[in-house]
Image (cartoon, rainbow, N blue to C red; front, side, top):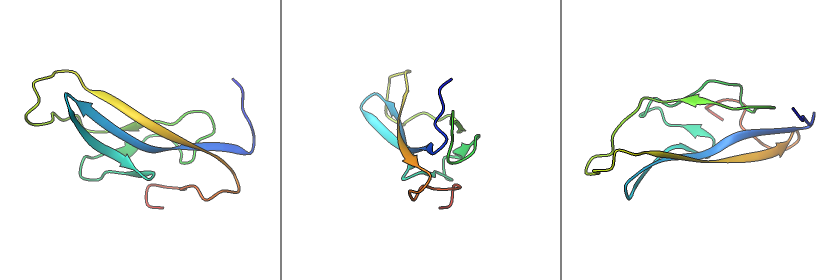
Length: 87
């Protein structure tokens, strides 16, 4: 795998989409406590980043499919990236 010593990344945003509805589970690098979203890898990450959350169904949607759509932020070590779920 290719690595760059001064580059890191973190999950900036994630949402669950079901039918026409969307629910944000990560916003601005912060993980939703109400939806029990938790990082399972270091923040920021060098090679991979992961999280877990309790599954849920969006009320009023007949679709059985859900999609998770995420955006990551790539940063140099000198930029202001979060170092844990609270900052």
